Length: 295
Image (cartoon, rainbow, N blue to C red):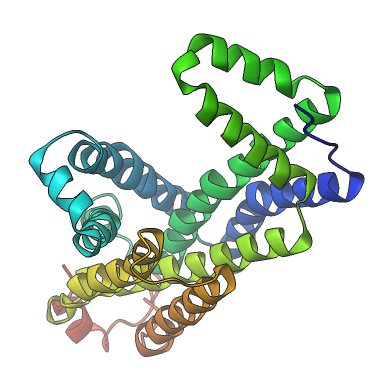
């Protein structure tokens, strides 16, 4: 099978993707840390929250319910709207609960408002590194294999190991080769739009859950964050199962608007209205009422 050739333009775009999404989130974290004098540990905990609650806890449970042969999975496969709802509910519940647990435990003494954004940068940035940074590294690996003439050898070995999957393997290989040889600026741009506004959403949600933990009267912000997260992922899930049919750029436009609304809403209505926590030794005579509401 002729897989074609990955040109210099495509290789440059793939390298740009690696740089943007492996290095970019780290640069963002460093700039925020230096500008606000935030401890890097807070950002790291945001990343760890995503790792534990989204990957270690959420995914295995979700896969056990949806992908294995069981009555629930069969019901969901026959009802695409319910399938989309369940698929969207998992990240909404697990990731927002992860933020809640982090703020209630390891970050319980971090009451300065910058903690909320630090956690969001860690959460959203680490997700971007895993979802796009590692993906683009694999893209470059595929491109080098194609240009070196070794891609077919990999496909042949896979077919030998699972001959009953030969048609599927060859089909997927052709799709990968087509993506690599035809990779365009538009492909890179659409990935960038999605991740930038996803990071904004995660930061906005982190702000919301932070204030839900700081103030008992605002605890309703936590379930609101769960609902908002579920709604965003629900649109994407409905598109996957063809309940709705939207183009890639239409989906990204929705993510952009949604992520912006959540971030700027949380930023201006919560973060900006919050007085900075005084440093030790400062006059705290005006902060007593706020302290009563902290958990």
